Amino acid sequence: MLAFSVASGCSRARSKPALTVFTWAGPWGQTFERALKPLFEKATGATVLFDNGWGEEIPKLLIAPPDQPPYDVMIVAPFQVYAVIRRGYFQKLDGRKIPNARRFHPSALNNWVFQDGYGLTWPDALHTGIYNTASARPESWLEVLDRNPGLYRASYMSLYTFAAARYPGRAALAIGEDFADSFAYAREQRRKVKHWWTTSPDMAYSLLQGTVKTGNIHSVDTFGLLREPRGLDIFLTPDRAHFQAIWLVPRGTRNRELAHEFINQFASLEFQREYAAAGFPSPIPEVAAAQAARDELWARVNPFTDDDFAKLHYYPYDAYLQHWEDMTTRWNQEVLV
Image (cartoon, one colour):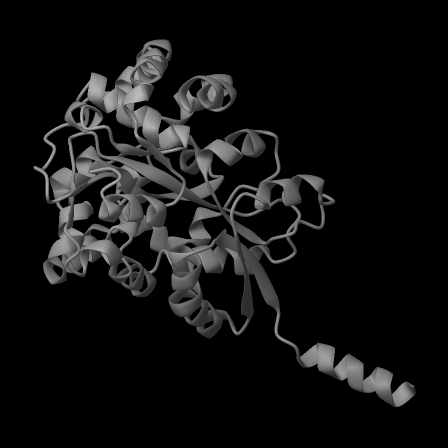
């Protein structure tokens, strides 16, 4: 027993520290595992353990003891986490320990979460139109509605689509200034929607089968569809809103230094090049410009010019959260019917 205890103690002494990170499943988790993990482990000598999923991370955090969070670092979406940040579940970051974030374009950081020091924000999937090329390219979201489209079931994206149809070029402002009008328009126009899709593959299948001819889709999911000739193409309008992704560090983590270095490696030139090559937007202008020069399809989808970055904005999450009941219960009961 003594020999076992000594050996066990030596084994623990030699073991590497481990950072536990929650990230989204699919292309995010795959890219982090392939490209971010080796960068972080080389830089720190620690190991990183990813937990990939959708939606279960916040409930796990809320029920955990304050000094035992389930994760050291979390990727989160605004509508899940804004209120949780304000309730004190996350610690403020030390910007001096994330120097690579200084390369991010200011528009990517133009948000209270970053400005108040809680997290690192960056633009993720872009609000994108897709259509079957057997029909003409839609010129506006109003034209999309007139073609009985497929739209995403999630309110944050498809309410924005309706607002872009009603107020082209100013959808985000319209939602913020008169949410009730934008919601009423969505309710009035809902019967034009032929298919409410749940995943991008679901939408792609509907397009290829001819169930619908056009609709909205996540930009990061278009690359696999358009790399091969499938009779599909994309379009963008001036209402180019991005999904906002955020890295946060829960309060109570025992790996604060490693957590900062993980986020710092995410913001590094080395990883951002890999991230862009996987189809994601990059908030670093020089990375974006280089990827656009290499990949015509990527350049069609993602921001890479000075003008693109100047216009970059997120979905109007603050307005959404002010009308959360409308965005959840009423959306399900009055629009998805």
